[in-house]
Amino acid sequence: MKLDLYMFETCPYCRKVMREIEAQGCKDITYHDIHKNEEDRQTLIRVGGKEQVPCLFINGQPMYESDEIVSWLKCHKKAL
Image (cartoon, rainbow, N blue to C red):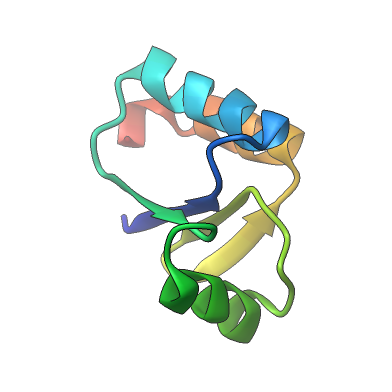
């Protein structure tokens, strides 16, 4: 399963998601800071359709909203 998190460090919703990722010990997530990398920002807009973070791409499919992402992570804990 390919997971990519589009985020930026000072976003409280992103930090919420990152705390859950850290708590679960997930290692197979690639982080894309859209404030540090313009190419990542453009990819988020092009593929996801909007510049909203956090956005977790799960096998190329975007998921927005921190609560939904955290719920998904908890439900798929064993697969991560």
